Amino acid sequence: MTNRAYVIAGSEATGGAGIQADLKAFQELGVYGMGTITCIVSFDPGNGWAHRFVPVDPSVIADQIEAATSCHDLDTVKIGMLGTPDTIDVVAKALSARTWRHVVLDPVLICKGQEPGAALDTDKALTSQILPLATVITPNHFEARTLAGMERIDTEDDLVEAARRIHALGPRHVIAKGGTELPGPDAVDVHFDGENTTVLRAPKIGRERVSGAGCTFAAAITAELAKGAEVGEAAATAKRMVREGISRRLTTHAPFASVVPIAPQG
Ligand code: PXL
Image 1: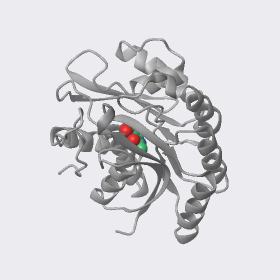
Image 2: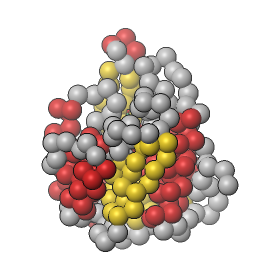
Image 3: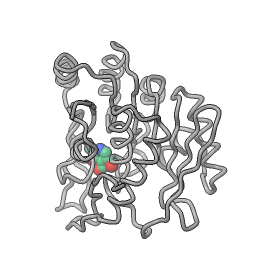
Image 4: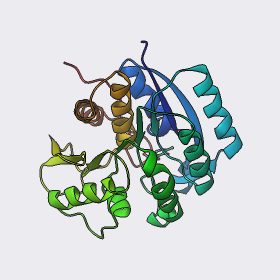
């Protein structure tokens, strides 16, 4: 396990999403992972599993990044939940201070069950400060609509249009995920690299969204890129991993199941 991958993301205490899911995905795919925690999310079982969110002090985030990047030669990083403009500021500065082969951005604006209003300030700061540094971005349906400035994404063509608009904001590769939101039997993702559009498809497994699926997808892409894969291959492996992880999902006492990150076989 000589390839190393780095993640800067939030902790999600139930283990389903966030940095916990990311590091499991790294391990499953055979890369050595290290992580920096940006915020701590603790669902509240006494209040409808609402999100209790605590940002980590920006100076502590900077310290963690300093420790990880001084200890290891890193060229591949995943960025997960940042959560506040101050966090975005410190992460953008740290990312800009060195050269990365790949910065994979999962542009987490809100988590399952959160109100879209919570996304507003984060969305502006992400777009201006982090998107220009990303080489790969993996927006879900809501994030794609928000970042592309589109009121609706109802069809595969709409998703392609969103990917093109987000590409214009900086990232070389946009992998926009239709998830369960688009009609039809398949979960459809669109990969646009500025020239070519590739559509990834796999049959949907039920209609429920599963916690940690998006985190696992971007983390698996990051791990594969750390191993030297091309973005298209990495995305295909990640999609197989998420599909397997959703089919093996854990039922929990919360109103959502959790993905189980397992490397795809064969
Ligand atoms: O699944 C998105 C996500 C990412 N990161 C953290 C989260 C969540 C959703 O709950 O808590 C830390």
